[in-house]
Structures are given as structure tokens and as C-alpha cells.
Length: 73
Image 1: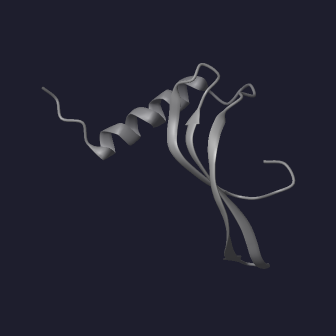
Image 2: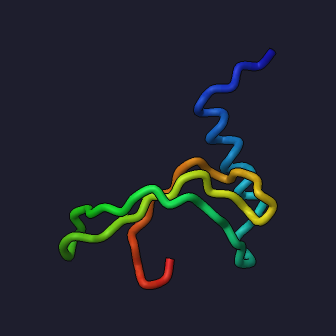
């Protein structure tokens, strides 16, 4: 039986994201966890943390997504 490691799981998720592609827009959903602040080149930047990101079919694409909070995410 093949043991699943964290690295192999990440590689598998990246492979699945590659299959989805970037030629068209896609809709994803996630659970809001929190907002925060980080130091940026031009001052502090607000950030957002989302968990359990899923595609249109409800399949988990990634467990966590952190991004800067902008007018349009």
C-alpha cells in the first residue's frame, strides 16, 4: 500500500489545478477564516485567509488560500 505524504498530496492538488487550466474563468468557493495585516513595500496591506477551497463540482482544490484583500478578489 502506497503511503500518502504531505508532499505527494500537494503535488496531486497541483496536477489537478493544471488540468482545470487557466484559459477560462472558473468559480471556486471557500470558508472564510480571518483577515489580517502584513507589512508591504508601500505600507501595511490587509490580507484574507480562506479554507477548503472547492471547484464548481464540490471537489476540494486546496485546503488553504491566503491573499491580499483587494477591491476585487
